[in-house]
Every structure is written in structure tokens, then in C-alpha cells.
Image (cartoon, rainbow, N blue to C red):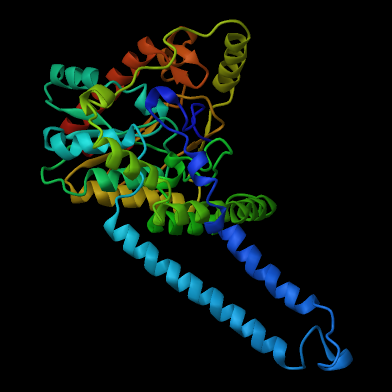
Length: 412
């Protein structure tokens, strides 16, 4: 489940571009396939034509139907091949859609990235709960000098985070000390609110599409058979929507408006430092505390969680493969991969199967970390407020500083 904020939070500069993408039904896979199949069916149901075989067949002499079907198949194959060639040309020559605030963060790092040695990435539970400046100050107090930056964004989950990391580190030369990633399984859901937005389109490249395809078939063997079959079927029904967003991404749909604006008005000057700061952090949307029914509901959830702790869940094989890819990326840049299980109440906690070379920081236990779950430190049941974020940030810094002095400690 995505963070409650979704993609379309105006404060983060996410711009819904549905009016651009939803007008492109002509490139929809659903539409293209449906039109082709519909024409094929129409050929089979045309009324008989007198004088051309009488009662022999639907509108043409015997033997013509296979030839017509073959032509339609060849035409469709030619369309797919032509589309692939055009998409390759566009992909090679035109930058992809890059929504805010992610574009501003990547552009900032392209100019200043070598100054940083520690990176955070994840959903709003990282974007608004890990404070890079406070983290650096706490690390320095503990004798470790770091300079950290948050690549996180509200609603960011795998496989989107993988693409952002690849682009952020594409031209990096300096080594990285820590790569801190929120530990989540692959999310194959696209909500109706997110579909057709620039934020949903930009991360649907070929590598991410193939990961989502493998995710369709990847199920944890510990789950009941009926549940596994149901989940596979659900993801297969969702996959055409991902394929449609992949098409939109590869034809660079929606960029014409930007080009026209630049041609008429000239390049837009944007102050990246003002948009993302120097550390990529955004404070919680609400700095207050829970009240009323929200507070009472949370207190009931907390009491239940204290009685019945969350169970560890290794998830599916493809989600574990995504973690392995992040570990490999961290290793290529000399970094230690740190996986965070965020402080939120839930029945199951996703964790890495293989923890060799990984630091796993699990903050899911309210009995072990009562300060993170105290109602006065939360702005809603799923998120910390500013005082809670400060407690959380200091906890992460202390455990990572200890990791440097004891790199072979038992995984948490």
C-alpha cells in the first residue's frame, strides 16, 4: 500500500498530467489490441455476398478468410515493429518525463552530488521523517562526519525507487558511505488517482516493466495456494495498465506542451535549491498531533500491536531480487546498504532473506521503540510529527555510527 499522500500532492510539485495522457487512447494497448481483434471478428461475421460462393461463406469465397487474417496479423506486426523503431529513436534523442520534486533532486545532484556521501530513499516515511541535517549533526557528535541527501518522495515504492537510484548514481565518481532504503516489497498497484499522471509514467521504463512482469508470477510459497492464485490473477489484470504507461513513456507523450512553451517563452529558470533545499527534506504535512476519533482508533491499534507483535514476512522472490539489485548498486559505489523498516503499525514486516553485507534496522516494534509510537509524537497513525521525526532520525544515526565501529554485528 502506498503512503496515504499518493502522487498528486501539490506541495511537492507533483503535477497531474491526466489531461495529456488520457487523450492518447490511440496508443493504448487496450485500444490497439481491441481494434485489431474487433476487425478480425467483423471479417468472420460479414453477411454472405451473393454470386461469390452463395452460401459458402461470410462475404468472400472459400479460402479468402485465412489470407485476410494473415494480412491483418502482418499489418499488426508491422505496426508493432514500426512503433518499436520510433520509440527507440525518441527514447535515444528525447529525455523522459521527469516530474517534480524528483527532477529537481536529480538535477541538484547532477551539479552537487559529489558533496554528499549518504543517501536516503523511500516514501513519505523517509521523505518527511528522516531529517538529513539533524542526522549529520548527530553523526558528527558521535565522531562520524557525513553529508546526507534525501532522494525520497511521497508514495515512492519499489520499483520506482530503483530507477531513481540508478539515475542519481549514473555519473557519480566519489564513493558513497551509506545508502539508506526504506524496506518495502514491490508495489504493482496503480491507484485511479495516480494513473495517467506524469509521476506514474516516468518510471515505467523497460527494466521496471520486466520486473513488474516477473512480479506477476512471483508468490511466497508459504502462502495458501488459493491466495497465491488470486494474487497472481490480480496482478495479471493490472499489468496492461503498466504496459500502457510504458508505451506513454517511450513515445515521450506529454512533452510536446513543454517544448512549445520553451519555444515560445524560452527555457524556464528554476531554483532547485529553493525547491528541494540542500538536503531534499520536506517536513511533515501536519506538525500537530492526533485528536478525537483518529487518536482513539490509533490507541486501540497500538494496544493490539503490543499484545500481538508483527510477524516477519520475506515476501516474494522478485521483491527479494529487487533488494539484491539495490545491494549490488550500493556495492558498486562502495556503500553499505541500510534497510529501514519504518515505525508504522502493521501485521507483517517485510525483511531481506539474505542479510549478508546489509544492515537491517527494524523500527516496527512499539515495545522496543515506545517513543516512536507515543501518540504525542505522531501526526497521524502512519506518520511521525516533527518531534517524532527528530527521535527517529537520532535513532538511525546512533545505530549507523555503531555500525561503523562494529561492522560485523548481528543483523537486527
